[in-house]
Image (cartoon, rainbow, N blue to C red):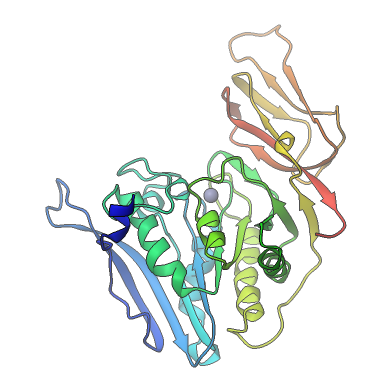
Length: 337
Ligand SMILES: [Zn+2]
């Protein structure tokens, strides 16, 4: 690990991070392969800078099948007027670009899940090289980082922005203030199933202000979820002082993932028939979904019941489920963070 950290990144940016104005370019990652001997992965990047001020790093498609981030960030890169900017905005609409092009969560090159590959390695797989570049070259430039997620092809979420509980309470407060400024319909104190290797953890350990999201999913984006992402990005830039004006703050409901009990995992293969929809209140003991066996009639479905009071904050998609899949997340409604 120590040896790989001292090695330079193979990624070369075609943009100058110190230049003013608007630059549309690429992070060029050499990738030699059968159809392109000296070829590269070209990850689109936009840098918009003007005057003095903080730097925001905005990233989407850390998982390749999550579309609100790329949709909002491609628009922002095209429409953000540099004369309105005080500081710098670095936009990477599709961080795991090979996965984004393939429409898959992980990279088709190495099966790498970028958000389990941090801090990365300069001498590792393509996915690990992207993570390493972000860790050593992009995050250090930033004061505030927004990384867009949604449920991809196998989960659907209530639209929320989120931050994590952190050991540094001042930093935690900064992160939740930024979540409030993003102003999604829901705001979450988020618990991770497995935080090792995540961009989130890497950014937080560097002391930066960090906001993530889950804005829908099911392998697509809706007009509503894209609008939440678009407004949230602008609100965050206002909150950071990079754009003038106050964030356009809308009512939000604060949610909390209190413990591992909030996750339910399937113990059966079958057809999943939810009896609650996203946002519906659920009480402990109530049925959330039935899972029917697929092979014949006359067999009762397995009932999956809530183990806590709350609202259905995430659900499995599409209609068939396998043993081990995340079936649902139940979040607790809180008055305040
Ligand atoms: Zn994701």
